[in-house]
Length: 317
Image 1 (cartoon, one colour):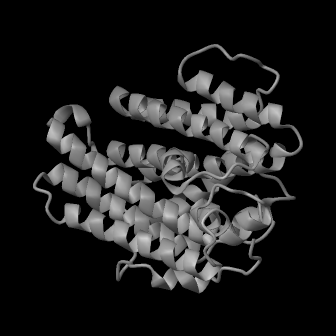
Image 2 (cartoon, rainbow, N blue to C red):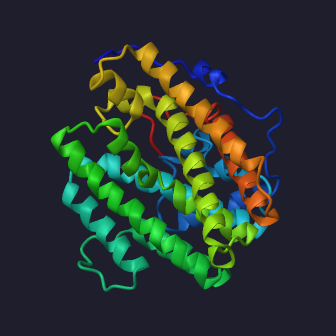
């Protein structure tokens, strides 16, 4: 496989909004999030520098620019937890994959109100999630909690599937990859929080309107996948990861790296075009607001990718 590097300037080929707003509430919640992580011993003097340089604590301010302070704290703490969990999986994969699998299963059991299969791997990552989840349940209505549980369980199942593929170094076809990847990135649980923030309850809409909501969500999810796989290519290629569309194009379809990157950029722009076509023809105000927040999520994601060191080689929290 090519060892050529993907330059961050490739993000300039992506369609963007002219102006990106950043949520100013982040200034008031950052310290609370830091203390939260310190209290659960997941942030300490050895990794605080990497955490700050990764800009993890301000990710939410880019992707939820219109959330109020309470909403932003909830949503931002969740994505911070996701980064920590993702690094835990990467670091533990070669050392103790059984602990990773059991941790994932324990998280599934927790959100589905099932007694843990094993307390052996009841670790601080699970405890941190439990603390966050209790806060979310305090504020979100039952519909959004149930929707989150469904999306989050699918995310955890996708993590288990990826572990198996990685163990076997089995590279998927593009269509199969995209089906699993929609859940693997935990994007759908994040979009669940947009529904919570804009009060988008599918029970209040017609079947046709719910199909429209799903189309918007799928296009937005795919766009985030394409952008993430472009910017993370260097790191994931270096780590011999295979859950990346650019790597699949190169390794399974024999494209050059440049052609694979160009193709993925085109797919991202095409997906955004399809999303905007639907968005511009929405008649329902509530669905239109959801689409507006989705678009800001996608655009904020691109801008955050330009300032984080998350995708540098060997970088972890």
